[in-house]
Image 1 (cartoon, helix red, strand yellow):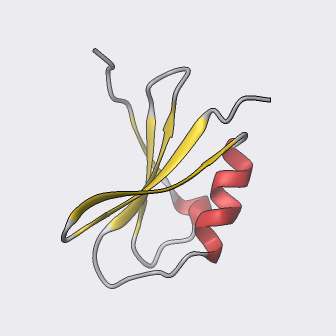
Image 2 (image 1 turned 90 degrees about the horizontal axis):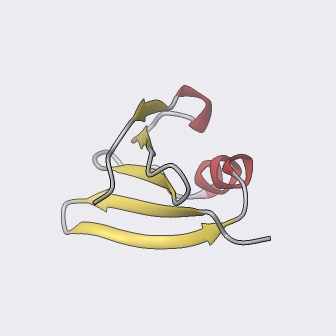
Length: 72
């Protein structure tokens, strides 16, 4: 199975790629294990739809806010 989702950290120094995973559920589980910082957020980008799911600092993945983004 192709790795459809990329996980990024968006912090003070700009975006940093974390990992690529096959499912959204795997991405959520991985984010829950990553350090939660005072500022910044994690984001998961879906390659198929171009949508981005943002996970604000100190929030659990189940409390994600969904942001649609268009791809060029």
